[in-house]
Image (cartoon, rainbow, N blue to C red; front, side, top):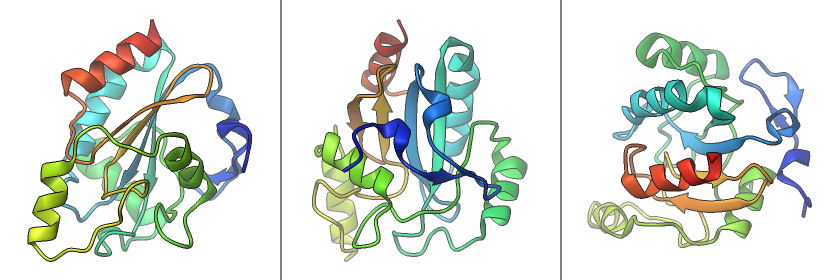
Length: 180
């Protein structure tokens, strides 16, 4: 396994090969996204949070994924256009990846290994089960919009369930303490 989150290869939404090295020294909120999900309106809150804290060495990094009921079938170009037009997303988006299962991207292998348990999500998981939607057990990502918080040193310090919105006091507290 990679020894640092900053060494993991990723691709920008434009297809440029990169790593997370350029975000070293910043607090990161990494989130897997989808444009055809009931949670898609979270883009609005994510953008608001990003606008509020981006000058404080804070970044939100969006990783579109099609792992959950094929709720992100679009191409990278279509995803970028959707996010821009519908939610005015200005935080960095990356190329679509897999966040669960056998083809899981190394970034999500790293994140789920470093933080195998999420805060919250029990009621959301039950709701999915009642709808006969199969879910992946922890440490796998539960659904779209699961959030990982990385401190300035590159440590994964928290993980929040998909239904935890960015105005959640506990999530905000973790971000504010990491920025301070």
